Image 1 (cartoon, rainbow, N blue to C red):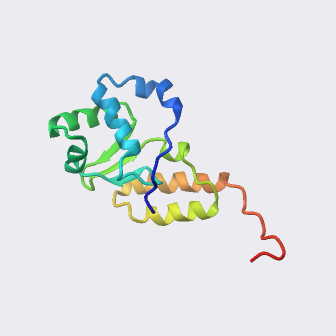
Image 2: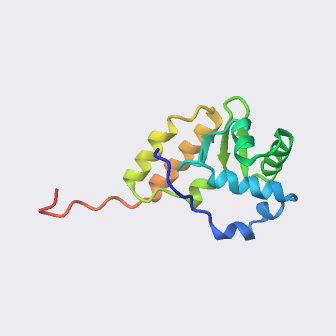
Length: 144
């Protein structure tokens, strides 16, 4: 999926009990990093080795891992150690496919996810989005 120039972040994050449960400022900052970093994609699931994040943030590995663990404990993200992938919880609910073509692009991008657990979560979420999408309107006569 082509990387966008920006990410949508819901203003409701500030009222989220899970976000408010983060005790440290670093955890809050790293959560916004997970939402908006250049590694992010339309699925909210992407490969992010710790070294990439440490380099991007300019933090020590210890500080980064502590902040990431705090986000995991708050159920804001999941991290698969084996594949080094981040899964942002509720990403697809907050950033759903806008139309069928968008959904197909998301499904294609999901084939790049290595984590079996994350792949299954995304497949379920995409199936639910598919049910919610209105059918594409038929083409208008005279237009190709």
